[in-house]
Length: 341
Image (tube, rainbow, N blue to C red; front, side):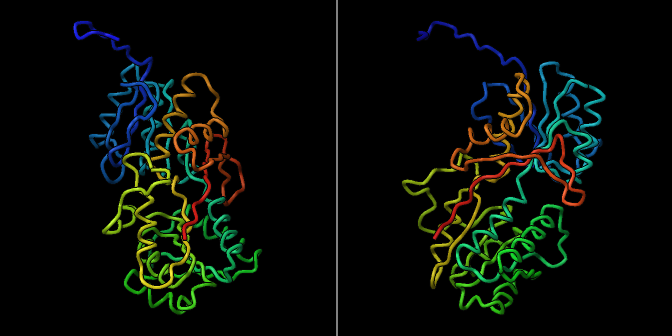
C-alpha cells in the first residue's frame, strides 16, 4: 500500500473507445479508467454541420482512439461512419439501436447491435397463451410512424396468436381515450385479455388500466421516461436484483402495478432490455473485439450476461423481416422476461 508521500503511477489504457449518445451515456463499468470517452450528440439528426460531428471527427485524429460506438444511433449515423472510415479505415464502428433502415446502417457499420424483437414478441404471445388469455390487443398511437421494430413485433404477434388460438387485434388510440377504448375489449372482465403496448407513449396509462381490471399487461416498448414511481416506496425492495445506477428502475413499474385500485393483474416486462444496459454490454463487446476476440453471437451474449446476469441473455444474427436474409454484422440480444403479480 502506497504511503501519502509516494507517487502512484497511473497507467494509461492501451486504447480508447468513444461512445456517443443523444443523452448522457452511462458509465464505463468494468473498463479501465480513461478507456471510454463520452460525447453527447444532442437531439435530432446527426449532420456534418453539427458540433457533435466535428467533435467526433476530431477524436478520429487521435491514434489512441480505436473504436466509435453510437448509441440510439440517429439518422445520419451511416454518413458519419462512412466519413470516419475514409479518415481512419482501422476504426471499429458500432451502432446501437439505430434509427436508420437496417440495410443502410449495416452497409456503413462494422457491427450493429439491437434487441431481439422477434423473440420478445413471440414470448409475449406464448406467455399470454400459457396464462390462459383468449385475446391480445396491441396498442399504438394514431398517426404514429411505425418503425421496422414495431412492424416486426406486430407481424410476429399476429402469426403467433393465430397459431396459439388467441384472437389478435390492433388498436390505435390517443392517450385520453385509452380507458374507454379498452373497455370494449372486456377489461371489466380482465382475465381473458392481454394488453400489449407496442408504443411506449401509452405504457404508463395502459399499465394502470390493465392492472386495475386484472388484464395481463405486456410491455413491448418501454416509455421513454420510464414509469412513474409510487409515492411511498421507490427503492428496490430486499431480494430484488437492483438495476445498475443510472438505469430506469423496474421497481417503479412494479410499484405502479401494485398501487392501483381494484384487482391487480399480471405484468410482463423485459427489465434488462434498456439502451443503457446495451451500452454497457456494447462497450465490453467492443473491447473484446479490439483485444482479438471474434465478433460473434456468443461474444455478445457473454458481454450482456456480464452486465446484467439476471437476464440470461442470448444473441443471434438479425434476419431481415422482408427478405429473410441473415445479416453478417447485425446482432440482436434478448433476455428472459419478468412476470410480476
